[in-house]
Length: 119
Image (cartoon, rainbow, N blue to C red; front, top):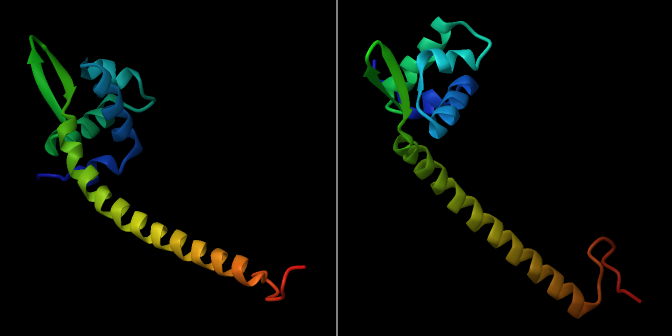
């Protein structure tokens, strides 16, 4: 079963594993020692991260070393970016609208709450 990156990063333990492996390559035992969950549970998380391509496992002798493949996170970054652009445009439009209202209030001498002229 091929999993996607979004499914992989949905779990906080997997996000922490990615963060650890972004800084250094570790074997499975070293990864599992950093958590308070069982080695089989860590192995399941590693399997999911491997299936979606966020981790590459290299066999070195009898040990399996995990290495992060952060290029796969570009998919998440691109998806988030489209919403960042959308909300930036909306917030810019709101800011412009509020500036216009403030400018009108200054010109008319009215307050926004009461509608009465300032003295």
